[in-house]
Image 1 (cartoon, rainbow, N blue to C red):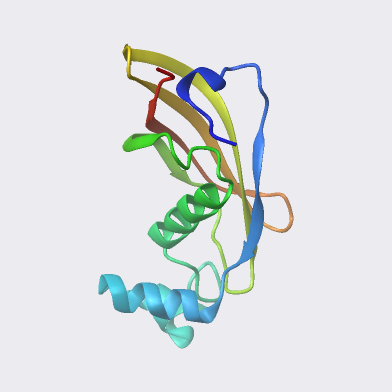
Image 2 (image 1 turned 45 degrees about the vertical axis):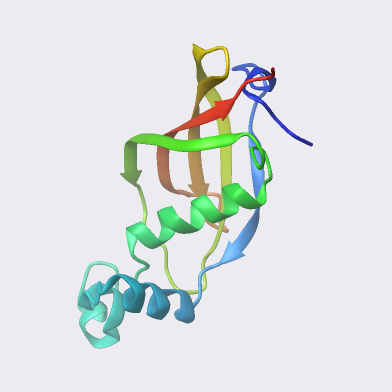
Length: 147
């Protein structure tokens, strides 16, 4: 189903994604892709000595995975014009290798730009397998309006 700007409002409640388990390969690939080989993410011996007691996923990796899970929800496939911004980004808890994450989104604001487009602001929460929030943010998406 195609969702245009007009199809979203603040009364809809939460949309939820499928879940995804964060793997060793995810951390290794992300480190190689970005060049971020920070020891907390890549060195088990170092990470054991930290407050976390083990390696954790990069915050930017978890954010990126949340974008992918959102895309798989197919809320805005054909109507997305641009990722317009992100605010209030907070890394609440660490994500460990083997954690399973899920995304929940709800509309918190709508702003008409012109007759052809508008901005939807979502409150987005990423939770782990224990239903603990690990990441939260407000993402602004520029969407097509109905003709």
